[in-house]
Length: 222
Ligand SMILES: C[S@@+](CC[C@H](N)C(=O)[O-])C[C@H]1O[C@@H](n2cnc3c(N)ncnc32)[C@H](O)[C@@H]1O
Image 1 (cartoon, rainbow, N blue to C red):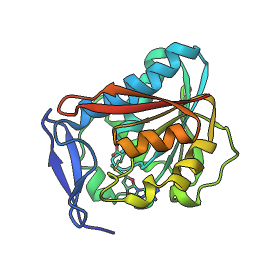
Image 2: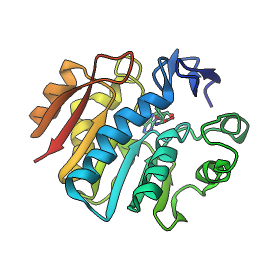
Image 3: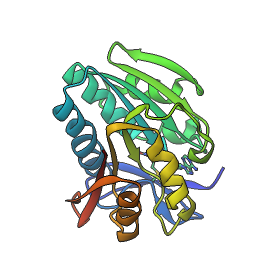
């Protein structure tokens, strides 16, 4: 397990620092505001508003702190939409670390804990509107049926820290899992990523980024 430290980000919310990579799990400007904006607003809410679907399949690359899963769970409850949430993770956090993360108030804390306590590599129905499937597996080795997911939250470490996850064959592998009309969303806005996603046939949009970041990307499979 790499050395990982708890940090507080600019909006007061927690994140983690992978010491060896010198890389944080979220923007230092604000973990909560980044996740809410990039993945929930520009990903889940965008898809839900556009398609008014009753059952949305989300794939997350990197479960990490569980913040994106937590915010998606809250969104599903609030909007009464069933979210089937699959999340890949190669280094599940130890109990002692995730227990220190505070994203939920005391009333909701048990649901946040349930996300982390849910067994790995099996589907767990945590709520009538939320089914979690955490997989202790890398994106490179994950092989679901193609065209299965409506949204991919691509939340790997940054390309300069973990380049292998941003290479064209891996992006192609991820995109093959998206259903037509499906949405690929990420905090990263690198020109090379834009070009690669376009070359895979996606319609790529540069959107303004969360506070402190100029841009982010959303790409739609035609
Ligand atoms: C930027 S962090 C984001 C985590 C998470 N989305 C969150 O909100 O905390 C990237 C995560 O990807 C995980 N990861 C690293 N390599 C991976 C791989 N090959 N496949 C899937 N996840 C990976 C890391 O362990 C880390 O938890």
